[in-house]
Structure formats: C-alpha cells, structure tokens
Length: 421
Image (cartoon, one colour):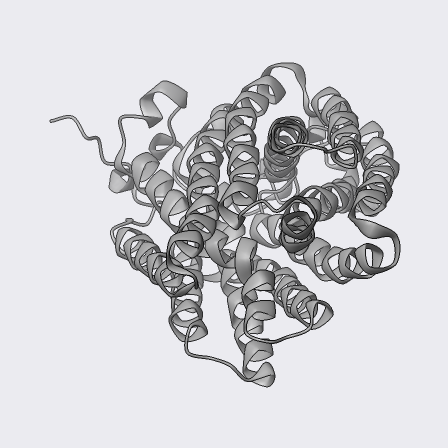
C-alpha cells in the first residue's frame, strides 16, 4: 500500500494539532491550580497543606486513570475515550465553583477533574507516536508543548479572571472553555494511519526503497507483561516518579512563594506563565534533540537543566532573575515530557505502548501528588519553603542518577536487560 499522505499534507500533522489542543487545555487547567491556592486559603482559612492535598488527590486519580485509559484506548480506540473524558473534565471544572467545604474541593478537583485529566493525555500522546516513524520526536514534542502553552496562556488569564470576577466564576469560565476545545478535537481525532488507509510517516516502503527507521531493533521490543521484567521499565518509572516530585513542588507553590517574598499576585502568575512559554519551547526543542541524539540523552539534558534551576531558586530574590530561572525551569520541565513516550516506543512494542506509557504516568503522577502535598505540608510546619525546595532538589538528583544508568535502546538488543538471571 502506498502512502497517500505523501501526495499532499500528511494527516498525521492534523492529529498532532488536535493532540496539541488537548494537551494545552488538559495540562494548562491543571497547572493553574497554583494561582487559585491563595484565594482558596483566604476565603476558607484552610492551610496550604490542606489545599495541596486536593492537588495530590488530583494527581493520584490522574495516575490511576492514565493507566486505565492507556489500556482502554489500546482496546477500544482513542476517540471515544477522549470525548467522554473531555466532557467529564469540563464538568468537573465547573463543579469546583460550587465548593463550600474541603471535601467538595477534594471530590470536584481531586477526583472528577483528575479522572478527566488522566484519561486525556495518554491516549492522545500514544496515538501521535503511531502516526510517525520518522520525526516522531518532533511530533510528540509539538503535541506536548501544550503543557507550556496552556500554562503561558491560562496562568495570567486565571489571575485576571480571579481579580475581576472571583475564583468561582473563573472556574465556570474555564470549564466552558474546556468543553469548547476538547469536544471538537475529540470528534475529529483519528487513532492510527490505517483508519484512513495510510501508513505512518516515514515507514519503510520496500517498493520505493525508503530507508528503514533508526528505531530500536524489532527483537529489542517487548510487550506488556514482559516489560515489567526489564530494567528500562523500572528505570523509566523511577525517573518519572522522582523528577515529578522535583518539579511539582515548584509548580504548585511558586506563585504562593513569590507572593510571600513580596511580589504582586499578577507578577507571580506571570513568572509561572514565562515558565510555561519556556516549557512549550522545551518540548519542541527536546523533540528535535530526541530525533537527533536519542530520547535517553535528551532526557538527561532536561534533568540537568531542571536540577540547576531548582538549586538556585531558594537563593534568588530579584524579579529579573526569577524570570531567567523560569525560562530554564520551563526548558527542563518541557524537555522531560517528550522523551518518555518516545523511549517507550524504542524499548517496547507498539501494541503495548499505551499500557506501558500509562504505567509511567502513574508513577509520575504519584510523584506529582507527593511533591505537591510535601510543598504545602513542609511550609505549614516550618513557615517557609526552604525545606520543601531542598526536598525538590534531592529528588532531582536521584532522577538524574537513575537517568545515567539507562542504556541506549537503538540498535542494541541487549539494551532491554532482564532482571532475571
């Protein structure tokens, strides 16, 4: 079968565009919780640890349904999963406006929004990897730049809406925006090239003499249950867990921290927005680097960038330096997102990609949950963020150490090393 995509614009890039919209909304709406932290504390008198626990529940729910949605999308297809959970996500955001007690926040934001959030990202990301053999890294990078784009756009918007309309009306507006974007994107989403009679971009075509992909050897890729017996599976899960502890402490508490040391809330939100813009650039840059130097080395570079930034944050007070650190933090954060689904495809089989990547996200969101909670809890018992930032730094060191232990998958059948003798 010839690839009709080469006679005109390849449909896979439209899939990337729709996945980008999904990521922009799903990740952006999660990140802006940091902007709502202090308004919630002021209205209800809750501690930051109490409010951060809602974020932790959200991330735990995210991780659980990331794993489930990966398996469901492998079995039933992506479009149905995206549509149902897009509606759940938007409805959950609007329900937050009705919060009157702490358990309301835990249910609406922690469980319902977490369910929708967790069921959107894995299916869309793994679907993009099926549309591309060549340029897979840049395609995934563009998709996942939505994390940064969403933060860039929605963080300042959240500060503006809260100031002018209050936090309750802000969540109603954000819920409507979510439905308006996710429903159309889900309806037009295509799971894989064969749905349109196409093959993946850059796939080998013996008749036309195309060059095989520089991906992992077929014999080096394994399926779901066997993956749990390999070192790369556990290394990637460990890295995802610890790097998420590292950056979640910063993401959830940076706005509150900056206002604590004297910055205006709008200025603090703009710093988070700059980090988002940089994260968007970081995902695309990381995608290009992944195609060029491999997912393993791109992951290491992002871990180093994140680690350097966190180590400097607790000693910085000047606004200009905060913006500089936000740029480098965002580059590290964005750079971490792209290599994971690409490495999943390089180490393991396509048929199990959703399940295996879902397992990684489950570990990552457990780290996000723990980090978000620790940031608030350690602030409550110490009165500042110094201990919390030290924990963030320590988690980043562990992530980098494990990252250095990863062996290259490409062209190395022995890269997938069994834990069994």
